[in-house]
Amino acid sequence: MEKLLRDKKAILLFVLPTFLIFTIIIILPIFFSLYYSMLNWDGFSKGIFVGFKNFEDLFINNTDGFPRSVLNSCILAVISVCIQLPVALILALVLSRGIKFERFFRTVYFIPVIISTVVIGQLWMKIYDPDYGIVNIILKTIGLKSLQNMWLANTHTALAAVFVAMLWQYVGYHMLLMYASAKSISPDIYEAAKIDGASESKIALKITIPLIRPILRVCVVFAVIGSFKAFDLIFVMTGGGPLHSTDVPTTLMYNTIFSRSEYGYGSAMAIFIIVECLVCTLIIQKIFGKDVEY
Image 1 (cartoon, rainbow, N blue to C red):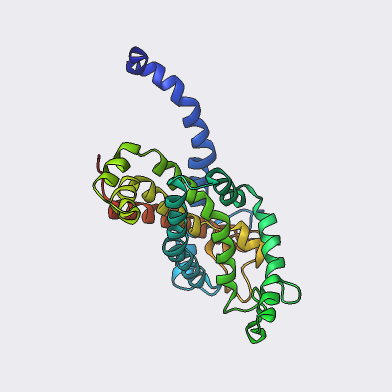
Image 2 (cartoon, one colour):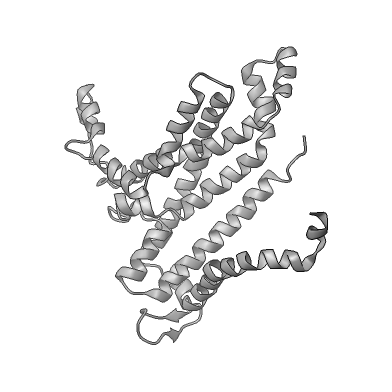
């Protein structure tokens, strides 16, 4: 095995197929999008080279609500990090301590992750329905009829309503990553801490969380990037409405390309999303710093 690992030709042979697939489905489309972003092109006729005009229209002469969509995605990212990840962390810490029915709860929390996003979107649309939705029914039952709302049709509540569905869908994903990392910690460390008189809260804060820091960084990156490229659930539930209140760059890009046939302008949005995700990933990596060996 060691001899094989030192053989550069063998390494190239094994890496080359994956590299080719990665290049074809990721690298080449990015370069094509960059090229299209410099064209005034409707997707059918011959494109006209306009340089960086699409980016200028995107950031300076914008009239289609792109800044609002970027703000919405940033709000989703902040809420995901500040609410979704702490909830997932608490669930992971509780489950990893070996509670009763641990496997059952672990499976239940992960089920939304494997359900089709279209199904989840339809499910939450029924939950928020103003006539027979369970949210309004519960409010009416407990005497808070005045708080009943058209949750997905109200510009003030639509974004929050979509986020609740996103939290429900992905909290189990982050929980499982943190849970697996916590379970990999040696039981001897916990035993030593208990002998020294450490409480469960101190064990979680002083031992478990520091030791799972690398996976916490991964979860933060996934949560932020997931918010920036969120599309399917928002598209199913609101389509970016009402009045662009739930629009994010991906939904606006989709409507720009496929509804208005502005492929060049839509490609500029795609390049912005790629750069945004890359920059935020680098910032998060910098904030967390290097992993510490324990």
